[in-house]
Length: 149
Length: 132
Image (cartoon, rainbow over all chains, first blue to last red; front, side):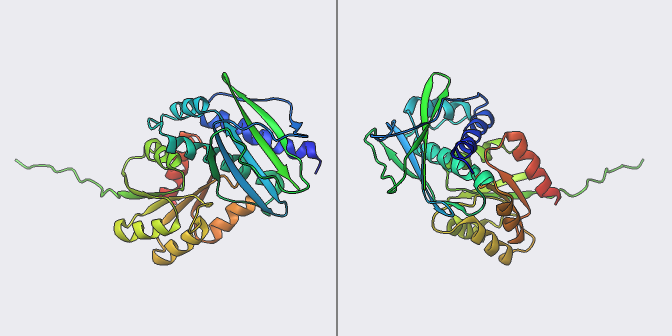
């Protein structure tokens, strides 16, 4: 599978998620390779470790305001820090899990690890280069970062 | 003068347990299900909690996530079915490949719903589970 095709699998996961869960389409910008420096992280970041046929990490990072509005769109009334952590983890889990449609059942995903704060919490596997998929939803900006060997 | 009494068919009340490590998803399923005669009996964050809750509340239908800490959904499905062969389990997972769904059904689940899902898809899947 080409790198473009692999990125396309994740973009499909992103678009499907926003359309179904918050009934408002997201737009994905042009994916790019993060060369020389780590991609910026936002307020909440959830990381999924990938193992099996492929190894690496997938993480989703988003601002608090975006996650709060998403919870509202889901009729959720609890906007606590714990629920925002929960949501960002669930989103990352869904993006990575849905990618098995393209990668197959040997694309194993971990439970999410959630980090709060904008300090870069991510250790990238050696020999890999992160691909950043920019996500625009309403007025908010988030990122999905895919780093697979 | 005679009194006529209408006969009423007995109603089966289904007891629903929700198992998912995400609080957002647990609350969403609890809010979104709108089937008559479904009583929510509790929710659990992983397979181990689900087994404990099952022993206390005896649910008849279950929604079950797969990727969870401590005990995953597949193992929990097997143990619940071993305890109660009549229990009906709807696996709700982001793992979207066909073999994951087949594997869950082979372990004893009665249905599979892929995340993300709409309220309508959830209720359709729960309806099928009840009619299964």
